[in-house]
Length: 298
Image (cartoon, rainbow, N blue to C red):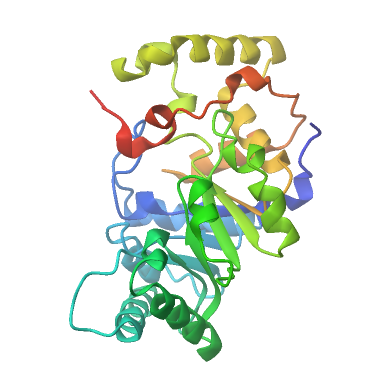
């Protein structure tokens, strides 16, 4: 695998902002970032040519924090939470949720609006929910619509009549399911952007062995292979994770979350360089490892 072009790295990266509203990530020892830290991160990202921000209603007060930092001119992608059972019509609920996001972000429109729980499209109100997204795109309050998934099988379940502009999914050196399933290529052929997240697996891939929680010791064989490959190639975990995602075919945006401007600078520096082939032995389908929602963090 060759190197990512240094001139285009910023354009390929989306700034993940869960840390702007939550103490996010298993390796996050600093907690939720301050507004001053957020301002420095936004400035650093802008100077690096990054112009896309990824956020969500579910990310605590991330949207409000971004609005206070003035992100006008940025391509903002946000996500709707799970739709509750209520007296509102589906269209009214979507409109109200988007109204809230736009107010918090202090903008008139967003670049993208994704569903955090795409399984809702398979339920009784699925068609109404999809058409409500289409209506917001038609009205110009949303540029692109899409879904955020946890595994490729969710895409298999979507009705063929539902077309999306963006799919966001996890992808990293251990979790290559989007590529191996063929979905990365299929989305590209369909003209749908693929945005990948969790390239550090919430920081787990960057943690040295002694710092890893005991829960992860059951995958010691995998960790040994990862550490051996890093030693053989001379790459740092950060370099390997960033370069792998940026060089993988079919990926349009790589979402990275940071806790400081210095952290973002380190990621950008790590991105530029050669990426040797990754051994297939590192790829796994074990959701107990790949899905942080299933982790026992003790």
